Amino acid sequence: MFILTAPLTAHVVGFTDVDNNGLSGIERQFDEILKAGGTPIQLSLDIRIQHIMREALRKSLLEFSAKKASGIIMDAQTSEIIGMVSLPDFDPHHPKKSEAIFNTNTLGIYEMGSVFKIFTFATALDHNLIKLTDVFDASKPIKFGRFMIKDYHAKNRWLSVPEIFMYSSNIGTVRIALKFGVDRQKAFFEKLGFLKPLKLKLAKMAPLYGPP
Image (tube, rainbow, N blue to C red; front, side, top):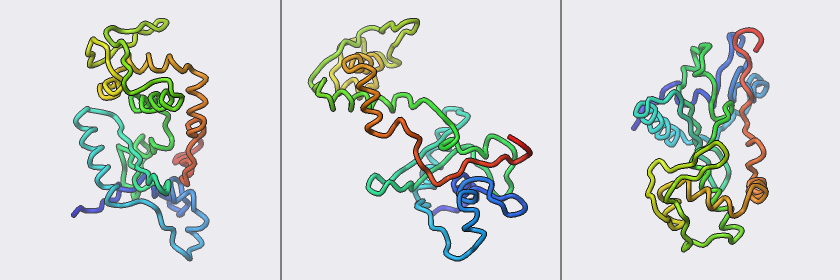
């Protein structure tokens, strides 16, 4: 059992101005339809999943003293978004001019970090350039231009492909990436649709106070 709060779906549902004009989220995307009345708009959000994800992100935000946290959960079978949370959030009944009103899932651009290692492995496996039994030298950092690539939890030894993935080895992942190069990686990302913005039925937020 959980208690529903206004901020739970604030960034998705959005809010209106004093004249009932949609300024963000679903309120803005379907402003004309909502004003016309008639058939209600049904969202794909699962409120239980929304609550669980918000609580998990809230705890992580506090644990790591982070400034922001965001997450999206998508149904792999239907492509429906069943959860979308952006923290800090806000009360849509009383929106204020602050960073909290920006949905970091749709308005921000961020590096994916180690999550993207998954697709490095997928690219190499898709081109049959590595096998799970292969091993790579992760015993010391790799210098690339002016950058030194190292592991945060270094094992300082050769690692198998599963170990590179399991320990999230930056060194091992780079050695795998060097096997297929930039062009193959870009082509693979394009095939997955990574080079195009994700189409969501959420309009960009209108300026709250005067011109942007």
